[in-house]
Amino acid sequence: MAGQALTALSLTLSAMPGQPFAVTMGFLCLTGLTATSWPPPFWALPTLTLTASAAAASIGFINMFANLAGYFGNHIFGWLKHRGASDSACLLLLACCYLAGAAIVSLVKVPASKRETVYEHIPVRSQR
Figure (tube, rainbow, N blue to C red):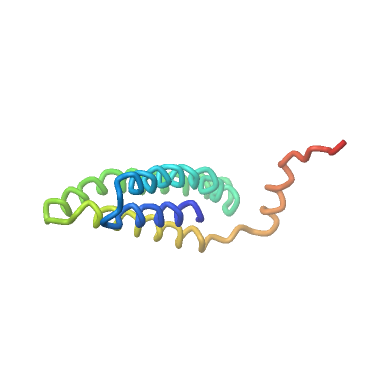
């Protein structure tokens, strides 16, 4: 959730008008960093919160909606640009989508029993 929210924030900051080019590029680089930080924990959620068969079905639905978003997103941005929207407005729409995703993911509750099993697999180094 934090990765999606930080991606939305960095996209919003990059869309602010009147910034020097280097600052805008810095925010876009930060966007790239934060946009790639949230998928690994996100993909662990179905197996932590659902049964095996339900997790498999949910992963299929997630992929289906991601493919639809990838297809329609390009068309929506083209339509917005054709209607006179600026690049900043398109980036702000994308930031809103990331923020909506973060809000939805924040509603997912991981059972306490599953949270404990996640930490059992983390190796602990003995200190000498």
